[in-house]
Image 1 (tube, rainbow, N blue to C red):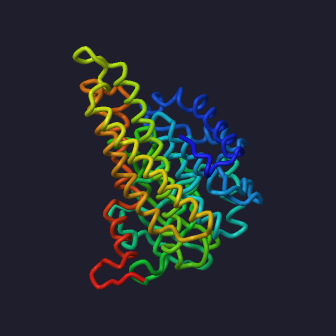
Image 2: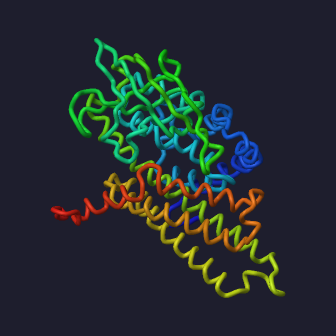
Image 3: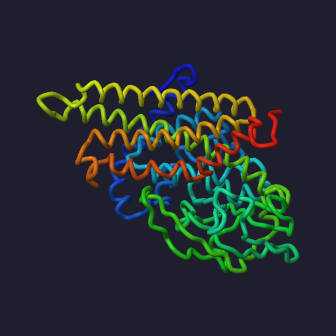
Length: 390
């Protein structure tokens, strides 16, 4: 559903453009891509770039549209109409998870080399943070960038990397000094064709099948220090900033994906007859569906509040963490509740709700687990042991 309190006629015209693209270029192929375990990122981006989809909020100087974040909101709401979660995730990683730090803190040369062709749809990007021994605990990463004259020599492994098998470059977080914890990390742009870089394996997952996910190995990968985004040693802080946008985008996607699931379930339960009446005529079912729609609307308004704050230049860490926490839990609740109303058919692979059930589990884990979101909120609220708010 759209809300004209926040969206102008121009936003709505853009919405229709994205919707047509989803209906014509993506949804007819989703089942095929799910079966293949990947999606054709280069082929799809070559079509999306000329439409202006891949750099909505980025500077026009580098091919972006220079628009407000409400356009990104519209874009994500329409990507949520894709009949799986894997493809929207792959697209949004490129547009809003691996490029924000580059766009906001990268040098002019880095933007020309990586951001500009990515906005045109000529390159595919990914973000390299998670490692075998460092997931939500980002400060524990071990991948090393050793200084050698004007170059970094990078060695390490990255795990669970979305778009990892197809990416032309990685926005990589690596430890660039001997300082412990979050200090001494840098964000470095690494072209995947650099000698020593390899995709060691493509990973099989519970859900999001169409999103290719990889383990990456870097063995003495040499890149110039000029590939560093922002100052050396600031990588952790820049990545934390990047996470806020990633988490909000995830919450927006999950909100509209959840609404689509509920509305599909309403249609199904109207058609499905049991004991001489449509399933939806049972009060326990239509009450529950209305309850879920209410929860979804509450999440939507929290998301919109985050967008308002972001557009106003305010810190959204608290609110985006809340939105991401709620979105992950609500997505699971919606998928599980709705699958129940499909009965045995809901357990069959041929029914879309089974895919939605599998896909829904990721958001409470990726981009910071629920427990990490709760820790962030507790810290900001001053309710950790020994902490006081403000």
